[in-house]
Image 1 (cartoon, rainbow, N blue to C red):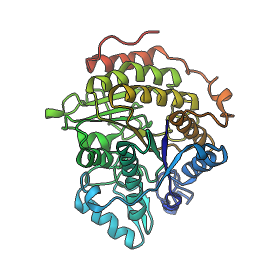
Image 2 (cartoon, helix red, strand yellow):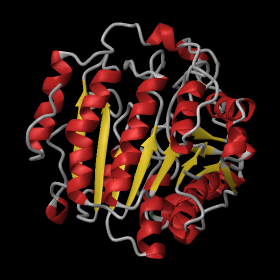
Image 3 (cartoon, one colour):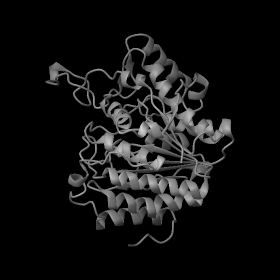
Length: 372
């Protein structure tokens, strides 16, 4: 397998400013300045581990470029694009929800993140690589057509889906999102579109609150093309693998897309500060293996991953390395945390997790649950 890899040092220069983890500092309320959860360390440390491990020599380096206004405009309203650009030219601003700040020059880096995923799609369709991973920042899957949200400015993966349709003639696109937070922005963009299957596997009701319920299944012609799989807190490798085998893979096989896009967040990982799930690097390795398998079955292996969340700078790099190793088919540095996190409680499939997954499979008409 040949794996395209997209990273640019400018992603580490995207500036969310100071925050008390999530909210802007406010001394009047006792909120001291600290750092923002969406700081560059997790992505930078993934890249540096990829280099130090030697895996970088096994990857095909692809050059990110800035997405154009017209490319971003396939998903986002012009007013949103213009506001981000204007704020970026001044002192910066907020993407739209009050917790997603960016500094001067933020527009150009957000456009570079979107463009990196487009380059990955181009390389896969052109046959230059078999699959691709875009290690980008800022993330994208919460961004709505008219506003950023949840640290996201532009919806990188939605822009990539429209690019694949309009530039490469792909008719049907499947988006699989395993970030710990609901992919609400991607869902909203494609909610009435029968040609885009949007699957979100997320922790139940963690962010955005009240978003991502099983009952949200699309509207109009797109009814049934949205699949939400909210998992109980504490779900580990066993629960996530069961969700993939029971819901995600059957849904993708039934849809038969021309391209599989994966919104790859690592905040479902053990020890993440913004999630309460227990997935290990081996768990993410398994998810990637299964995604590759179904891509081989239905769309000639065309698979592009776009990086989303993941906020533990110590552990996220090993999960990122595991995914890239799996895409390339090469092992390098073992995960030193694995003996600890794999022994934590609830790594095996639990009854409540099985019940949650089976309920989604039934609602989506996906047949009998996977047993064993």
